[in-house]
Length: 471
Image (cartoon, rainbow, N blue to C red):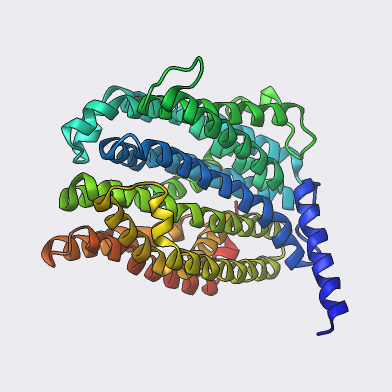
């Protein structure tokens, strides 16, 4: 290939990147698939990159408060992932229905679906918010937290659980934006939320100027306030922005036909993530039981670092959900399938590069978060073992989002149920307790199970049942 042709291709790629960052309205049902994937994937990857920074900022500041604080934050995150699961499930349904209506050129239907999803989510989130606030101590104790960790960290759990509605809205409204193909707005709102958190974390945790030193409570407040500002930004652009979604108050009045459609997709979708989240809770508890606070703190640091690199890949896989939904709405299932395969290819390439970084720079990355030799030992082991399956994680994410974007949330739910609860958890218990490997056995079970899940997802995707889902 000549130098001139290489420069021409590079220039074209750069032009697509600039176009993706402008956030202009696009038709993803026609034209170049490569261009469509890039236009959607870049802002979605940037969106998830900032979410991963969000997690790292929290663990960076909290890890310097001691191993009990770090363990408490990790255990709380394990519990609050149930809220994330509900939010992601409804968000997934909103993305699928909004994308399908946009593909059908039914913009009023897209608006109604988005607003009904908001009504539904606010009604549902009250239960975990109240229960988490009242029973924070009991929840941490049930997960195996040490009494010192409960004493110092239960306030953190209460604040985060009380702010569950903010988490719900942040995820859900971004799902609506993504379904409409407005990936740029989803990215901006998460950046606003996370930049506020990054600023507030040192101010409220350590105390600077007029701000008091609040320790772990400051971490909870920074996270909740940051996300709240992000939600206000979303609501502003929903009400006065120039996107496809134009909300009206009358669309918030319950429409049980639309709600029924959303619930039909969201229920297995929510279960899909609750199954995964429940598995992570069991694994986190197993690490505490077999390795105590040192292993738990190291594991939580490692998982945050691993997620820092996984979330951008999840962002790219979100492009598959939008492309599948809109192209099925436009009655073009072949283009929907081709978009998934192309996205999976790009995600696999990205994850190969990430795997190399994780393997070569594990120790310096971990040392940035802790200097405790025992905590560092477990964090390094967890990072190296868990990241061994990165390429499979990347492909599996795309397959899962392809099913979800088509409205076929049942298939990945069944895959997760068998992969996590009937394979990963028993394997972790066997390796950790019966084989005497302790926390290392838990670490090994993660990439083994995730690889099996990814291979199964690919096989079922190629069978094509998802193309026939009507929503």
